[in-house]
Amino acid sequence: MQQFLIIALAHFLALLSPGPDFFLVARSSINSGWRVASGACLGIALANGAFIAMAFTGLSVLQEGSLVFTGLQLAGAGYLLYIGTLFLRRAGQTSLGNVAGQQAVQGWWRGLGMGLLSGILNPKNALFYASLASMVTSTSPGWKAAYALWMFSIVLLWDLLVAVAIGNQRVLRRFARSLPWLERASGVMLVLLAAALLLRLARG
Image 1 (cartoon, one colour):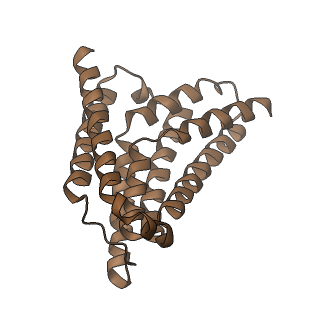
Image 2: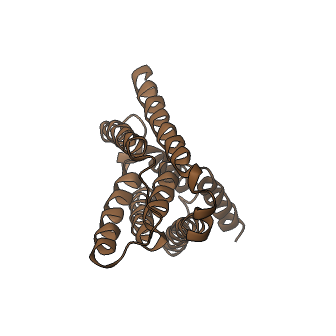
Image 3: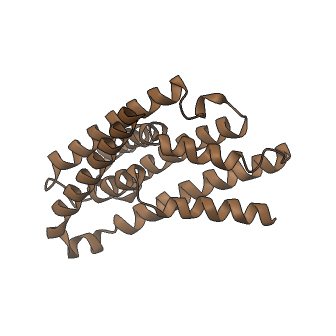
């Protein structure tokens, strides 16, 4: 039980640190509401679940310095640049109206795909779960499955909470004038993250 509490706390504290996934969920929720943004939340959770499964089964692709991991980092940097410039280009064009009908369905599936890409192409996710897996190498398969289910559920629930909080229409209307600046700030942050990742790869 003590090991579970340590791992659960470390995992939750990592979720509190805003990263690409957070900005994607926030942008989706601001733009289309939390129901559409829930697609991105599920995509991010599924990507995390894939990394958890790979880490807990000991796949070497998650080792830093491997060819696959380096390729993942490059793809992740490219995706961060894409999302960041997308946020910057569309800043100020956000509609606070509710998305309805077929548009909402298409938005949900698009969000699912973007969330999946955001989570898979984030090398920090791979390293984080690989480090957690090193703490449970001697743990039984049943406990590993419990850890994996817990972490997947927490990622999904946390992102949904973020989406609901940020996507509240009443709250958004109160600071609608600030939305373009929030979107620009998110875009700049993502571009800076991409630049930092590329710089690290260049030095390595």
